[in-house]
Image (tube, helix red, strand yellow):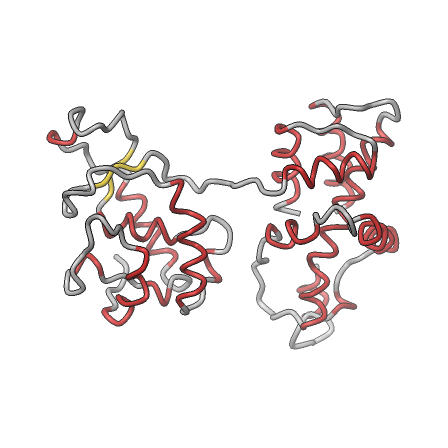
Length: 165
Length: 107
């Protein structure tokens, strides 16, 4: 499991769910955020384990959870909100990158049941979301460069091809 | 490749001369820069350039050149479609695969 570091609590304060804030002394709030790169393997392990967590009976149906794929602890959920799919190993210890990361990733982690902070949270997608940016610019670029009209699928292919290269 | 070249030349950091940039790619970079003035794609591509897994750090100049090399590749990729089929307007899946194969051979 990831190492618990108490000193990192304050850095994550702005990114907690304001509707159900965690007390600072809560052990679930202590995250190894300042050594994300070093603990990447441990985090992967943590993610893997979380996929096998079972759906609690009291969260099925009546709380508005429409068949979420995964349930994770709030600790892991907070971790997920701070993850970025691309530059995970390069996250530095300052609050600014985390602010950006949280702003970028938060919309894609759908959570429910915020009134009960200690119950597992529903997450619809644990896979990193490859956010496509600059659709208009890419369309225009292809038009100017080669007289091509590209669609959404083409832009997706463009990114898929460009990333590894 | 830059890492390997830097290691072979016993450099502590990967410098610009270690990057495997061909003449054609450099020309693509310049063409992209000239074209991108009013499109603004460069700042978007800069964000998407993945951090390479490295064992030697990049020099400042090298690091600044990495996004530009990606930009040059983008232009080359766009022009590849016209070489594959000069009449094409909407690249089909087969043409994308052709372009992939061409780049896989060259890069």
